[in-house]
Length: 84
Image 1 (cartoon, rainbow, N blue to C red):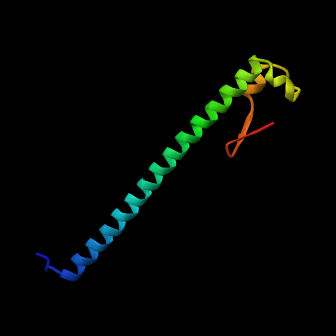
Image 2 (image 1 turned 90 degrees about the vertical axis):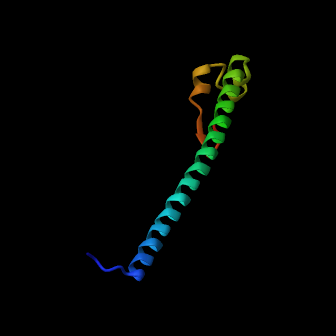
Image 3 (image 1 turned 135 degrees about the horizontal axis):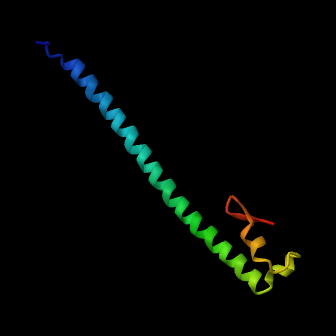
């Protein structure tokens, strides 16, 4: 039978608490990132819909591209902005 050591026990508890804190922090950060990405995705989808709508209504002709829906769908997004 092993002898009980209060200091070893306390150290194990501290180690487990540290791990628990790191896991909780990473989970919180992942949740925040997930929510941010959901918002960014919704904004990007709205931008794409607007580009498609403009293409169908002839709004794309202003940029010299005509009303081609495929060009609107192929727009490149960088940091939430449409690159033309």
